[in-house]
Amino acid sequence: MEHYKVILPAHLNQYGYLFGGHMLQWIDEFAYITANQELPGNNFVTVALDNVVFRKRVSVGEIVRFSVDRTHLGNTSVQYGVKAFGTRHAIHPGDVIFETKITFVAVDVRGNKQTVKRNP
Image (cartoon, rainbow, N blue to C red; front, side, top):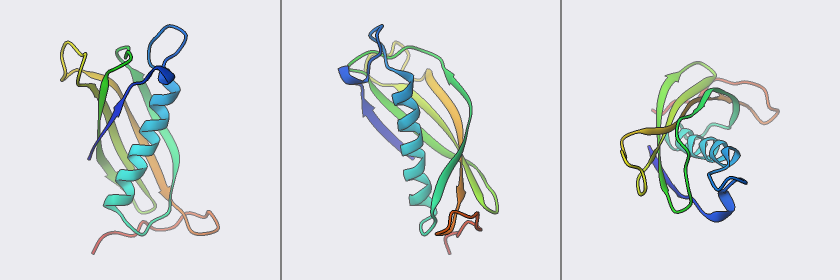
């Protein structure tokens, strides 16, 4: 699934580039949305972000495309690979500017792990 975000001045760090914390927040949000769209009826919580790699700096006005693809579906968890690409200012729009893997676990109302409900 794809998602987009425009980089605004409020997203910048003291050097004038995207603050990494915003990128991590969007990764969590967009992967969570994807998981809930693909596997409705589950309550997911984030349990891991693996090997977070910032490859290129991002400046104001850039429109970032996030590609979120499922890489693993387990009994109680689901994992997504997330890549981000610059679409407006990037010299090579196909170059990955950020990537990571994120894992969610399905939980019940008490916060205990439960089996992921799969689509019929």
